[in-house]
Length: 177
Figure: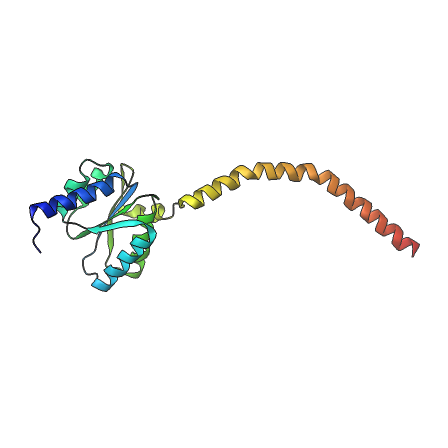
């Protein structure tokens, strides 16, 4: 379907707005993927908060030109799909990694987190980054660990004394019987 100039401007503006507010982007070639598979991918993207869009390469280049993702413009060759993570840097990478495991026709060609571009071989490492909730949980556990250790250390002598007295009591009761 041919796009008129207004439609092209609207697409560029939409993608530029999303790219401007995103923290990570993934570019993947999707040639050979069936419509049903693409529909499932889009549904998973909506559920995980990832913006997914198939855009003409020239329009995609214009859309990301003045954003942090201008570093991945050279990867816009052939039929590509753009995935933007708005909140978690690993969300788009995780989505496309999991989909590529199911469908070998999807090929990730470029990644960017912030304004830094990564090779497609870094997909696994970026996809394994913790989510925001996981990162907060790990941080809180790390912050809480020294306090728990201190409390266990302070309680240990009293606990040992109570166990020793109980053992002496049990020994005296067994001797008396």
